[in-house]
Length: 247
Image (tube, rainbow, N blue to C red; front, side, top):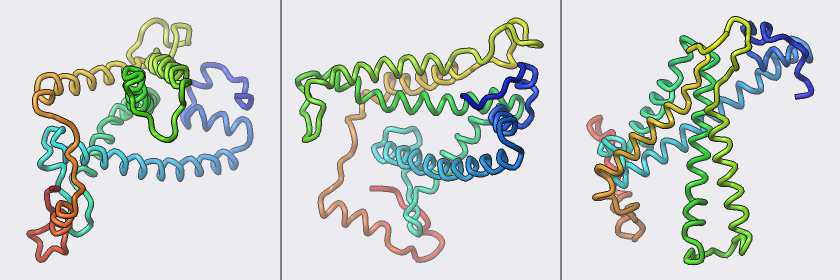
């Protein structure tokens, strides 16, 4: 924050290389800005790998529990690589589709993509906390717990997530920016719209169908079950045996 140069709104809006790169260039030099940008690119590459890995694992787990439409396809695992190939590609395609609006508006499209990711993570993190507060004294605590302080910590987390979720769906710009007087679709933050659509789709899927038959994760852990699963992933013989459904 202290490194942000004194620039006008026109400079920021006209920064073809991006606002962050403009700040780096003005505060240091072009060479240092390029070096720091290189570090960011490498970090984003590793972040992408980690995100695809975690997202595909979750989608595979939900598909194994038959809680995702089309689970018969998504829970199939490659016998050769022991990887849910279809799930990995589905996550990659959906992530790419989320960023398609950047073709028309790079600033808004990129911002919305990152904000949806942040809100989604926060919601996923806070749901167990809400359930813990709801359970109250009936909750069976583990060896490590917050004791009687859990209420204070949990409510602080809930309030923070509610605040940050609202902050990330606020408009990108006010009405005082030159060339952007009044409402304009160029700076419309459609993060809230997409998050709302996700709630409608997933909530509707649960209310109309899943709640009638979904009873929780399918537990597999006996020696016999594990041996049966392992036999399904033996070295394939021939091109016909490329994938196998998870047991």
